[in-house]
Image (cartoon, rainbow, N blue to C red):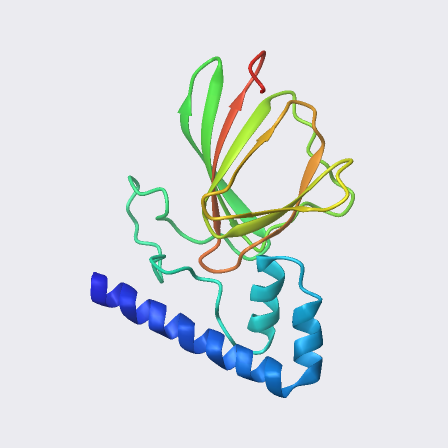
Length: 176
């Protein structure tokens, strides 16, 4: 396992080095890279030039079919996400959400009666929170509390292997 992760790391470093060399040789690529404002933008720009730099060290190349593993499962089609309810009680619900290049439809805002706490287990996401001047960028390990009725939308999530969220929803008090 350690050797496989080392090889994955070295492959990513090679792709990053090649992308850096391209950005140094081509002023248009460098300008496009300068215009990137978050990790997702850089990953998508690199992908347009044939470099896959989105997978982080230690992330599996495929998702094994192991229901006990939150990172396992079939990647949804591009532009979609799948939701699995992991636990559900009257007071709260815990979900695993697997997104693949997903975004909220143009003009659509989530306006939930429940509080939502999300943790990114894999990948990255870009969220828009109504009233905030800049989108919120989340990457692996980041968490965010979204109080009930805080309007928000998903602007972007990663492609293969996708973005995996752990989302806890609850009603009533206790949002902060």
